Figure 1 (cartoon, rainbow, N blue to C red):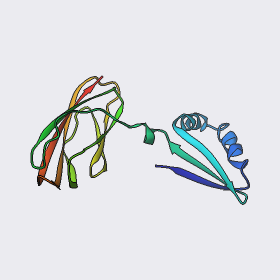
Figure 2 (figure 1 turned 60 degrees about the horizontal axis):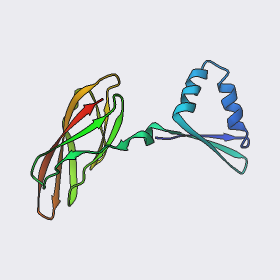
Figure 3 (figure 1 turned 120 degrees about the vertical axis):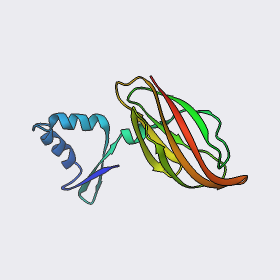
Figure 4 (figure 1 turned 30 degrees about the vertical axis):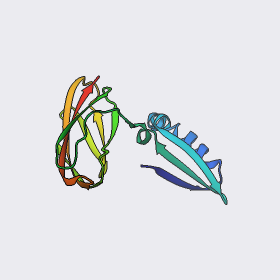
Length: 158
């Protein structure tokens, strides 16, 4: 997700607007934005473009998963560690093509978000420490067969 604001009046205008905004009650919000966003400007023909890109969109990293990913049509289980309040990127890597996927069981102590047909992100609830589990159903076809596989993921939230 990105927010792009376009200002007319040259490249110095966005910094002036940021200074003006920081003097009004939005000051704390702007401080939060400055911490959470990459701020960049580009000036073309007297038009300044201020782009805000959330760091959190880049913060999720792939977490190492242990367990065996089976063939299509066979269920499997995976295990991973995540910090309390942390986010893990969880791509599924199976031979062949994934046609569809859906959440079979939601996590009790976090949120699960579908990025695309083969990748999900898990975010552990801030302040929670302990075990959490969820399951995702994948349907596809590979060199050794086709079918639906349910992958149950067990998170150790630390």
